[in-house]
Amino acid sequence: MHDLSHYGLSRDRGFLSAVEIDDVLLPDDFAEVEDAAAILSGLVTTGRVRHWLKALPLPDIDGFLASADDAAIGVAMVRYSFLVQAYVWGEPTAPDTLPANLAIPFVALSDAIGFPPVMNYAGYVLDNWFRLDKSGPIALDNLVMDQHFAGGQDENWFVLIHVAIEAIAGRALALGVDLVKASDAGDAARVEALLIEMNGVWDEINAIFDRMVEKCEPYIYFNRVRPYINGWKNNPAMPDGLVYEGVAQFAGKPQALRGQTGSQSSIVPTMDALFQVTHTTDELREFLAELHHYRPRQHRAFIEDMQAASHLRDFAKTQGQPLKDAFNACVEQVARFRSRHLEYAAAYINKQASDAKGNDPDVGTGGTPFMKYLKKHRDENRAQVI
Image (cartoon, rainbow, N blue to C red; front, side):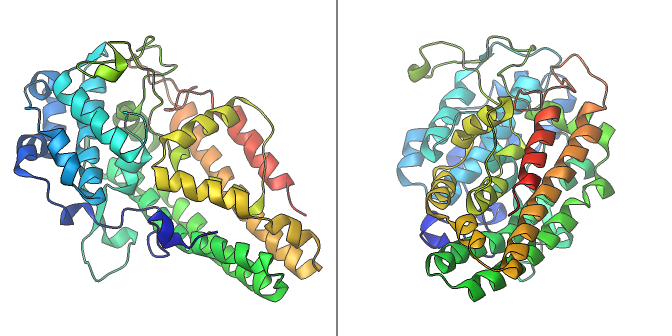
């Protein structure tokens, strides 16, 4: 198992971008794109956001990709992700076609990063933040969400809770690598100590997750935040998907793609891989397997390598009760996280009233009937103690 740096990850940031978005400058070629992104909430408010976005110039995207670093490509992806989602969902009726001036650069950027051309968790959360005080921590009282749809406290808080969780989880990822190595070496004392430390990290993660309700109100989330992050697969508002105009590889055929969802975060899949937690076949498991390809390449590689490398459960089973207790405490912490996710899914989505924009309270932004499967996966997680 490689160290975190091999995958572009770090103990301090986990899966978050290594460079903060306010420290990245795009070429002058992107000036009008960035101007539109900066006033996107205003463009949406006009009621004719497509009129304005259709007029944006097409930058030299091939030239940009030939010389841009990962940070610049990530920031360009943030801008286009928001512009595309606003184009699709910013008016009452969804379109059939994404115009070439948005489709061509969006697909090129997606191809460069290695995931489908639709907003995902990386563009919405992982690359979309900065610290106010650069000498301070990645913590809720020092964070700003950079790019918005409608804007406001609820949208900010929803994203920044995720950013803060991802930052803390960097320590869990580092501990995961250490646990694989220590269990392979048969070092029971170190494994137990690392599991106890992991349990403490998960206390911090769950404490941050519990704070979602402080500044993100369910009605506002469902009606003012969630509509913009829906995808175009299993969505009755777009039954055939979306045509990406001018993109040769799609040959004019509509593409049906999943929407942005917290299930694209790589934290829980990493923990499942580390603790060798498995789930029986169901619609959510198949959905999550599909979502794996919506992650950046390096994040996928980290999860896959963790899954292949970890024999932690097998090792723990051969050890004394204190080590088993430490292992079980960590498994329960992830189940606790899943329980809170289930509670939020019920309050923020399932109990809300439907509307006419494909914002179905029984279907997640990724396009699945999520409630029963979230509970099932939580219960399966909790049951796999030793």
